[in-house]
Structures are given as structure tokens and as C-alpha cells.
Length: 176
Image 1 (cartoon, rainbow, N blue to C red):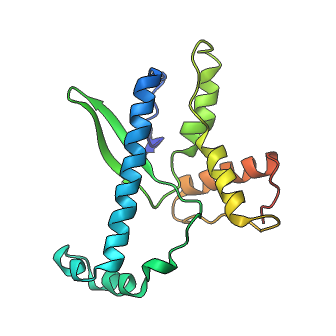
Image 2: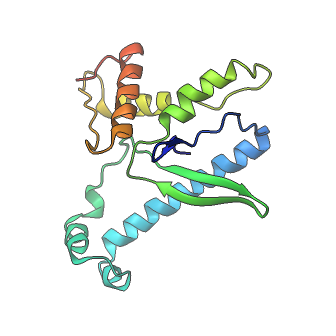
Image 3: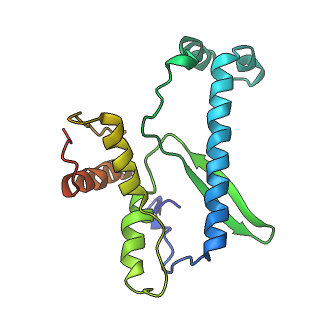
């Protein structure tokens, strides 16, 4: 869930508490959806005949034709955030954010702050720490890490600052 819409906070003032089975179910959905997104990306790179059928702009088609599937980096740290919503029909997804770094602060720092008041419940794994670890592994021993964000979006800058703080506080001090 994003933390702001225009000038209004959209973070709930209460935690969403799920039992372990429900959490595992949602995590499984996210993993399956990730595989589907990656498969769709691969298909678009291997099948230029689909570009026009899908109505992609020619500028995008040109870029996709230049991307060879075998040159896609493997093992690089990549994030996809799936927005699940509970409805009368069960869990539904509204979107996947595969191109923006949002959600780390809400899913990490905010969760840890709320956990203090709900000590009888466990918190899910910290996604910011997992992302920082994956970046460190992708960079390799002694590799430099640089964080970049879209300058037009102040919330992207906040996320990069949050991750940079995590790098500086953690064992990995490779940030440049």
C-alpha cells in the first residue's frame, strides 16, 4: 500500500493481522505472479510479433527489439510489489509495481513500529533488509553500490534514503 495520495496519508492507523496460513497463501500468490511477470517479459523479448498485437508504441517496440533475452541480468536484485486487497470474494490484486521502489518504509519501518504494540504477534520478514542483502550479493565482495531514484518523485528519494540508511547501519558498507 502506498503511503500518500496527493496530500493525504493512506496508511491505516491499525495493523492488518493475518494468520500464518493466510500469510503463506499471499506470499505464494506473489511468488507465482512474479514468475508470470518474468515469463511475460521473456515472451515479449522473444516474440516481436506480439508487440503490434498488444498495441505497444513503436518507440517501445524498438527498445524491446534491441533487448536480447540471453543478455538479461540474472541474479540481480529486483523488486515487484503486488497490491493485494481483501474483498467479499477473497483476496484480489489491483496492481504490480515493478518499476518503482515504493513500499519499503511501510512494509519495514512502519511494521516494526507497530510491532511494539502487538508483541503477541510476529512480524513478516523485513523487505528492505532482504533487498539490501540481495543488492550486496549482486554487487559482490568489494563491489560498489549506488542508489538512484526518479528526481521528480520525492517519495522515491525517501525510499533511497531509507535503503541507504540500512546499508550504512548494516554490515554492508559498500554504498557509494
